[in-house]
Length: 89
Image (cartoon, rainbow, N blue to C red):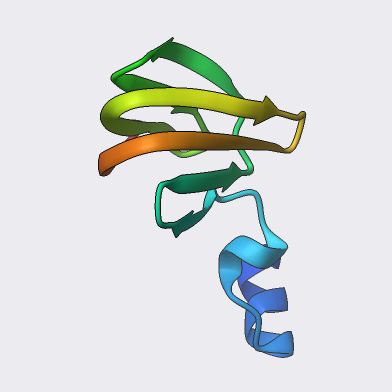
């Protein structure tokens, strides 16, 4: 049986992350907006690791700055070089 978020996604033709709690990432130039995270696990100017419902999301780069942090999203700027997702095992 499909989860509710998958059913809603199929029914309304929305991406799953738009109706569920999966991380949503929007990367434009040197600005990154991440939604649907549970907490900040680690942060320094070269690394941001967020805890999500599915595991850990890691952003690597140089001169990373958290411009804003809200309960539902983070705005990150800097020279972003990679984004990785490690699922819970």
